[in-house]
Image (tube, rainbow, N blue to C red; front, side, top):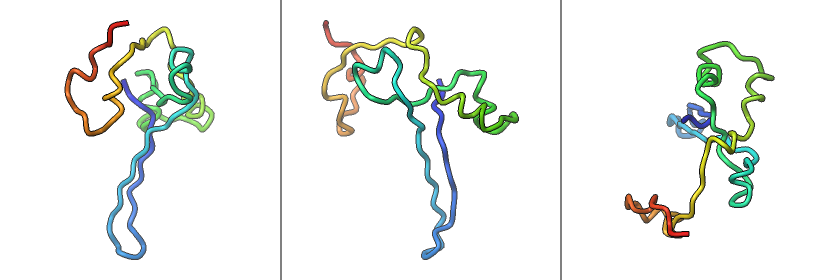
Length: 100
């Protein structure tokens, strides 16, 4: 799985330090995620990776066309413990589905 993202490397004008930034691109949710959240990371299908990364030629329309919700039928959702919402928690059992 690969998320669509953007990165930049630039020199800070005042200090002259090199700054590297990165962001994950989000978009509208698919039908699976819509009841949970109002946006979702853009997940790129494998055949789009090289075009997104600039390894293969892609026009603006092609790139914009990749910014769509990932098909809901290819993902699944299940309830997790509320502890998953805090970066202070990092135990493997956070990913264990809760009993329905």
